[in-house]
Length: 260
Ligand SMILES: Nc1ncnc2c1ncn2[C@@H]1O[C@H](COP(=O)(O)OP(=O)(O)OP(=O)(O)O)[C@@H](O)[C@H]1O
Image (cartoon, rainbow, N blue to C red; front, side, top):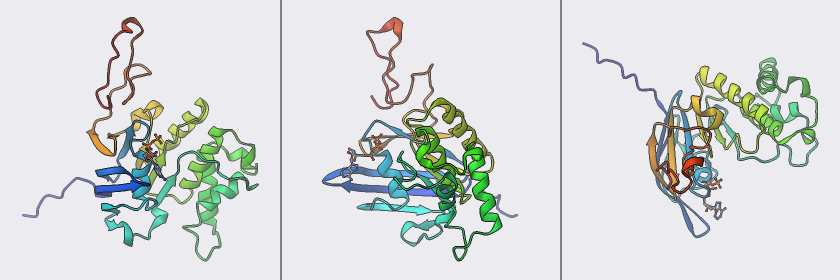
């Protein structure tokens, strides 16, 4: 009799016992994190708990002082297939003062897939599609300098999507983003997830992305203190790490328990 096939999807990210020190400060203190194919995992925690450092170590931007990272089953030091990974850094401007158009910035995200530096029809189509997904098709020729913060963020996300990555890593994609852009981003992400993308998101709060999140990993002071179902939101304010005060019972903050 053949063995029954395992139904557990392959791990896309495996972080084991990761430690990292920035300056003299131990910022990651033995983190384990596994994200499987098709999962949407939120990395939560208070300011300074190590969320950005954790995702930056996953893509090799922060060297580990101990532990290991594997991407798609390959140890990070041997991983070369970066077109499979889309990364949206914590909010910065997309152009850094360079007078680039939206299309140019988004097309730069496709370079990892273009052969010999010459974009083919499929490359141009992928760039157009990414711009369309974030709702900026009618502005593709505009300079990114003229965009609002939320529109900037949409450009950065389109840039990550242009390579049609299997794994999307985003650091606080909703931070400082206006409501209209948040809704577009949530819809964009929903579509990626429906198409089978694996997603690791640093979030300060679950917000409009809550229905998409399969699992939450909560960091506190460089350690994982929760790895499981996303904390249940109550009303608008019950977010992990935030004491929740009901107006009718102001004397006792109701703690979510995850970060307090
Ligand atoms: N380059 C650096 N040198 C020294 N310390 C750093 C450096 N980068 C980050 N840190 C410190 O490491 C800690 C973790 O930072 P990190 O940005 O990973 O936290 P975070 O959970 O993402 O916080 P936030 O929600 O504020 O972005 C913080 O105390 C931060 O001040």
